[in-house]
Amino acid sequence: MNSDSDLALAIVAGTLLSILVITLLVVGVIVFALRRAIPPAEDPAIAELKSRMAAGEISPVEYEVRVRAIEKGDM
Image (cartoon, rainbow, N blue to C red):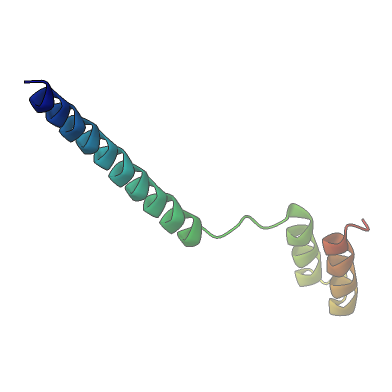
């Protein structure tokens, strides 16, 4: 009778492990899909520069210089 209980315990443990692995895979796929579907937030400083360039307050050349400076961390 001991081998029967060991077999039952192994089946239960295998089933629980399978459920855990499948759940983690499903959650991982959902997280991966959401991260790819949602675009990254734009840097507010770059958004402000775009707005100022659109309003004619800065030139496209000045915009590019400032964006590069922001991306390098100089500002």
